Length: 199
Image (cartoon, rainbow, N blue to C red; front, side):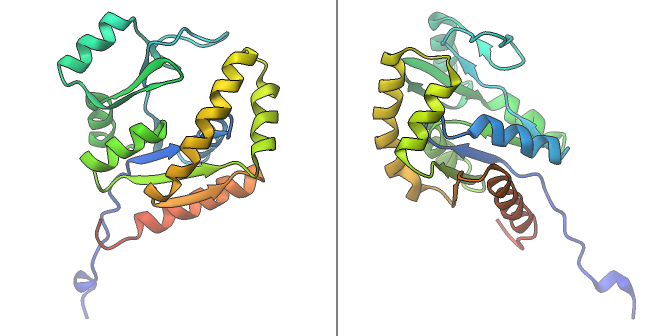
């Protein structure tokens, strides 16, 4: 019998969204996922917040002013955008399309508002919500970063209470208690998603 009758899976690239409250470890986990899989590429977002020490424009974020960001909104350039902690963040539609066209899987490290917007426009996106093991652990992580003032930390913790209620809007939930275990769990999710017959 000819092998030509055996179907050949296409394994198209995935659009991956990782969300969760500030301090839950999204950036660290996303970085490890991309280190382990060359098909995964970080989608660089635009933001109106000022750069943190060591961050570079065009590498970590596109750091824009309010007028530039609002102009892009008016032109419909964003796949999603949201106001988070008093600053605007957004994912450029063209950035995602370019990566998918190159057979890369964009990884969007975005908040819950953005995740909902992406799912509404691109229902085939894979949405993963990261949970902290506890609110106490989340507070310790925020303080351990030593990048934010007490007022900012208080705002982020208050916002976390609202964000945590949105986990049911996501396809998968992963508790970031053990870092390596959380990474392995997300990698298993992506393996399963690539093996799906239809999206």
